[in-house]
Amino acid sequence: MRHTMMKTQSSPPEFWPNNARLAISISMQFEAGAQGADAEGPFPPMEDGLVDTITPTWYEYGMNEGIPRLLDLWDRHGVKVTSHMVGQAVERRPDLAKELVARGHEAAAHGYNWTPQFGMTPDEERASYEKNIEVVERITGQRPIGFNAFWMRQTRATFNILQELGFLYHTDDLSRDEPALTMVQDKPLVVVPYTLRCNDIGRFSSQAMTASSFEQELKDEFDVLYAEGATRRRMMSISTHDRIGGAPGIVGALDRFLTYAKQHEGVVFMRKDEIAEYTLEQDDVPVNPPRIF
Image (cartoon, helix red, strand yellow):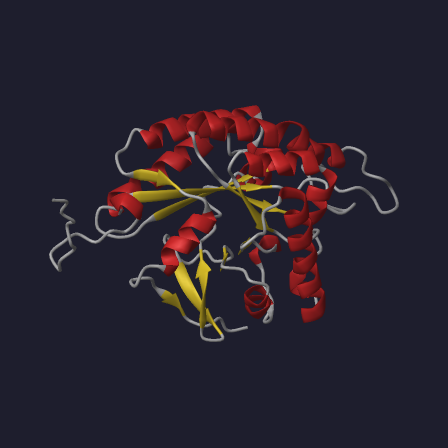
């Protein structure tokens, strides 16, 4: 006879699938090629009327070298990630976008281009997201159900638009180290939190952040969250950008961190859509209060 163990009030809570202790979710931004002519780069700004010929090549590195190198890294470790994909970037490199999904990663939405949606009208914002969805689904075969806004900034209309377009979750919230819910028209929109800490964008904004310091930051964050994960639901978020995280030194740091994390029992790597779907099945998820604009 097969017996199934039932949970009782004295049973320890299951915070993650298969009673995992810590969930790690990695983002890989697919952006290069969608930036505007005045997009910020690692070089001093050009004088008005002059053409910046070098910054575009810095972005192109993300598609030529960064994404392929990161994809190989994820494969070596058996890790599946979430890629927030800008529509125009997907149009410019459909081959790479298709390969990303074929290798088991999530295609999430990130707007159609780099026009800040927080300055758009509701109709303009909706049109940008609809175009983003159409491009990603047509080229990769996967319809996005997750969204990351430009610099994580939203409008008063954003959540309603996301819900109307069928999105399950968004990442534009830094308030927790675990998933949460935002109620939109009495329906839940999952928050799968992003991060500015374990984020390679710091390497761009500060040359003092070396690959080694990035690796140590990842390990320090992991150690605390792993310890806390014994008694509460904990999630570690890591963010990489095609042109930054795909550089050899940062990939080396990520490689060493992944090896370190996998040596610990009860660590699970999850795509953000997987986290969102799991969160909706739970009854102990915090609900964020409405935002005040």
